[in-house]
Image 1 (cartoon, rainbow, N blue to C red):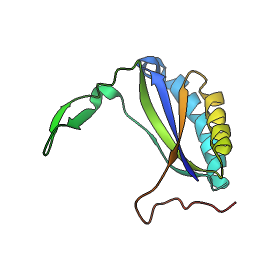
Image 2: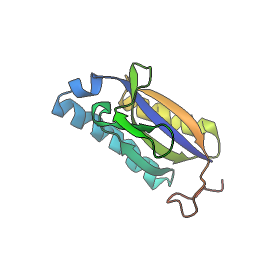
Image 3: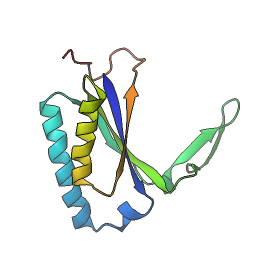
Image 4: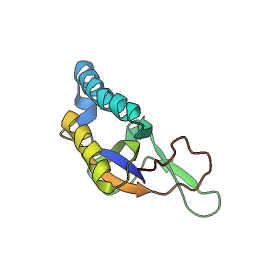
Length: 126
């Protein structure tokens, strides 16, 4: 089963880190990434840019492009990991590892159903 691990953080926190703090965190997260890749558990992962540079498309027809997301939340989505585990417990364990490297982040774990053939991660049979 595929699960998305969505990483959230309070707006402004990530931008407040020094380059050294950010690099140290990324080193810790990439260690976890490398292990999950070697176990064939990790699919695509992405670090998203700040919401200040985002736009939203909404409305009828072709839609209207507006500045930024307007979710009513203090946290913003920073990135995501796509993992493959037979149960939610495995995905939670992976999210706990990520949280150990970034303890001030919030991680949401959500099942993913793929609708496109040829996805880069194949569901494993355990």
